Image (cartoon, helix red, strand yellow):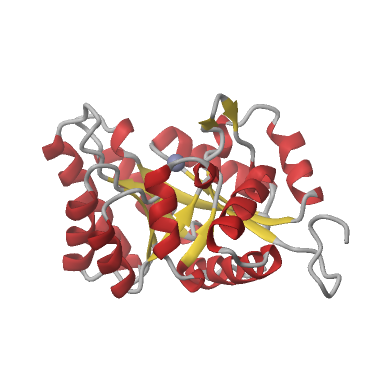
Length: 255
Ligand SMILES: [Zn+2]
């Protein structure tokens, strides 16, 4: 059976649920490659005003293939993030989610500033009914509590590597978790993914993040698929089918 085919012969279609496309070198070529490798759609996440504009432009050029999420990343925050928030709101009808957003208590951005910015994002998500793509490194508890308290209904905890008790609460709330190619080697990420039912899992690459020194591209979401299938001892075609359905449902993709 050729690789990338399911038992009944249909191509195994994948969705890269999280990629920083504006940072990917040779992007047009990489998007062609992704299509050839059965990547059916890509969620392009922004991090600040500039990258949000860039992902909107890329998604316009590749409509129905690249879907934009507008973000305010805790690593990209400056004291004055008002303009970035305003710009997200102006373009909010054109995005499928708010992301990458969240908290990172290992990063140098002051916590108070991160919490303020995340509060504004939560407010936008509620008023415009958008799902969140959440970065929560070393701030898992705080991120979950804030999302819960705000009453946000739809969220994915990207690359979750936090404690199992918080993970159980994330799942009990009905939120999703996304797997990256670090599912091959990161013990914390692998432990979390073992606990996440397939019905709550998305696949992603976080391109162009480097894994063991190699920069990821969207077509490498196949690596995430293979690692997850091995880890969970589930057929690759089944993991692909369910995670693709999950992404379509969570982001209400019209594809
Ligand atoms: Zn990211």
